[in-house]
Image 1 (cartoon, helix red, strand yellow):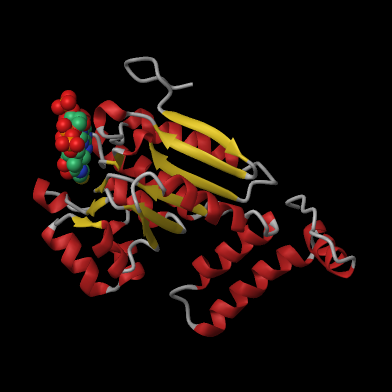
Image 2 (cartoon, rainbow, N blue to C red):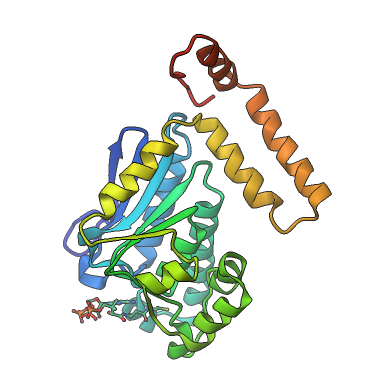
Length: 265
Ligand code: COA
């Protein structure tokens, strides 16, 4: 297991029913993305991707002070340009792994979600925040630009005007503003985030795990395509669930008036 200077795990992993919680654990660096942390998150996701019965992953930051303050700027200072390019590739790989993860991923945002931290949240399927959340793509203020999909995902999620507002000004917005812009789906009082996320995860837990993966894939891969192509994508995803044990169990359970016992296959 990758350890930080103090030998603490960089990512805490916790199972809660059919939900896995991944908690970024670098409180001394506002949970900034070091190279080791990016690698650890990718490794944890690869492992979770093999768990049939999983119905959701929650991504959050330790102690609720920061979700993630973006790239580790102290580490960056000592990196060559080629090392920085390699980091961008790795971070891009992590963000894509989140977007393509075969189950829903919920970002539970408390405190700062800045730069790469917000880009990670943008790749998640749900973003819930508490009132302490501060969100921004602050890169231009450092003389760079978002490099892990932020310029593209924000405009797709919230529209071009919102993307230009945040990307070009680098401003930080509070949770209520993020809610008004559609950047987060709900805002709860500090201390109530875990309960709110658990309620959403519990709802997802009632679904067939395989269905969750294919429903996510259908929405993601159909988006941006012409309707006729998008409907073909949807049908391809349907085919996967059509020929599944979960589908048969769902029908049987309905007929027998009982809750289904899905297996995620
Ligand atoms: N990389 C490396 N270290 C970071 C960091 C980052 N992105 N963000 C914060 N830290 C470190 C701070 O340097 C500080 O370490 P120190 O105690 O050794 O000085 C520690 O985390 C706590 O940060 P601090 O600023 O003291 O806490 P805060 O609660 O007042 O503010 C932030 C937290 C995240 C709002 C603030 O640190 C910040 O704005 N960070 C920069 C975020 C940023 O611009 N990210 C975009 C990257 S492209």
